[in-house]
Image 1 (cartoon, rainbow over the protein chains, first blue to last red):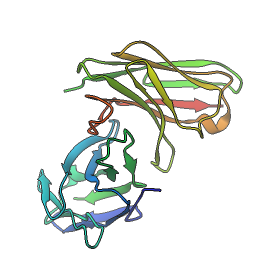
Image 2 (image 1 turned 90 degrees about the vertical axis):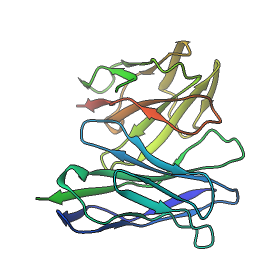
Image 3 (image 1 turned 180 degrees about the horizontal axis):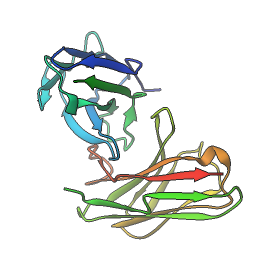
Image 4 (image 1 turned 180 degrees about the vertical axis):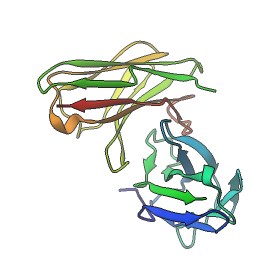
Length: 113
Length: 113
């Protein structure tokens, strides 16, 4: 079945440093790929999604490229801030119309001032 | 802006009791979901409800049952809670079942003593 594997947390960084959260996926279909972010005390919210291979998504300084050949969708940010502290989820959804969103295990990020 | 509302925020109960959680969305979406988030932040789909059609994750114990009066409301009842039911229960909605961007509520945290 479909699956998503991402960097195990927790990850702790200092403000101003760069972030990479690895995400790899397995599916036989042509998925849409997502990054969701969950701030403390809130539900997950969409950071961005990319429906097509070889395209890039971005939001709030975060970006990820849908790499079909490598089956990867790594999240990057050049300079993190304390307010980026959250749990980040990589997810996929098949384009065949399946209702189910497959989430990775989540990566807890803490940014120290 | 919050558009998926969950009550209560927290609930503490004892083993064997029955609990109910409420969820309402004001987005006009057709599909609603219940997810369970465990202490390690893993997200697991429990139910999806679309136009009165219930899709059940087969791994969900029978003591869990969703209840929907209309497409804007999806409640969750747990008969005879057990310690492993302690978790955050997240309600979500999407425009339709095949539209895979989810909007989550803030969650209900259940503690079973």
